[in-house]
Image (cartoon, rainbow, N blue to C red; front, side, top):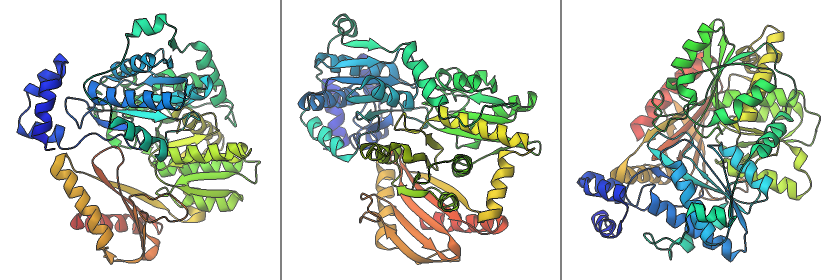
Length: 542
């Protein structure tokens, strides 16, 4: 069905005044963008721009998924669900809508009493022994986005098989008609129970249990990038000994993200106000969590300037810190395939095992669950993704900015005793193993034309693979659409290049982006030259 036909169906069947007004105000381009495809419930749940249309996040697309999950739960005789939400547009509305639908089907709902982080939702699932978890968030996406993440009973995002079952159920669930009861009625029936201080105290305690050292003589500026991190991160940092300065303009939840419309801690443009504040207070660190507080970004004061560390650099520093204190020779470091191979070098040095998984922290979480089933849960040391996601400990099954920020501040504290900074230690690691550097290039393709172009680019790289990128010859091509290294199939291509360089190509799972992960490990100056040449080569190809 074409976009215009879908649009007419929505005009006829929508009863919500706000959505009707948006529909009536649409021009031809708006209709194409909102209806050229249906928003997909996939392995990352739902993710899209909030607004009217089949390709957007709204009460109809979210409601159908929620009811499909409720039917899936009844078919499995599942009894309970945990729900949390962040500060984005419609997050609370979508959370309450879901709760009302689950309650209609007699499913007990454990509902966050305030905006709470994605890792806290994972903890809620495990704490309450819930069968399913739902988190309303678009993580670090631009301000106009929201999303719907779904978790299994272990606190890990759903894997492929249950996702496919829910998608199949959704084919027979009405888009515009909803089975639900009022939120107040569900409360009266005892079908909705709010979280309280007890679970928050429990969460803070298990995070702090991952600590290796107290935080001493460290002042950090903290920003939640207008998200929910204030509700978990500062408490732990202060209790462990850090002095915090709050970036007040960014620490208040704000769905419009006025100072950071693209609230991603990997981006340099979210830090100017925090750097100004850090300089004024002579702070050692800047810690920035993304809106749902599962990712953490770090700037460190080094030689009187604030240096923004990459996600890979933070991961390397934390691996080195944890392994230098590790007493488990059978332990695992788990990382995504696209994350730095310097992690592998560190694992070898300290005599622990390294495990590569596909992109998506659910694969790291599932690895922990499989260890747990074998009675080897304590063998998990650390998991990370280059996109600033980290986890130490097994109390949740998702990346967690609270535990990561605590460990970063601890490490900074230990190094400060030696008159060193995080950058000093990073350079020592580079001196030992070589100057491993990585750069992620993201290219956006909006709308139907952009979607088609993105598919064509990926097809071209797959069927007519380049023989060379700039001055680097392609030595080997790995296409993960065929199973490689016992990993599930994935839309990802790896190009091994001369001089030890590598380019990985994959579409984003949450935005209309193609990502190129470029890595090289020569000298600092050679790396800079390589990055420039390889970026130019990639941009000519696309």
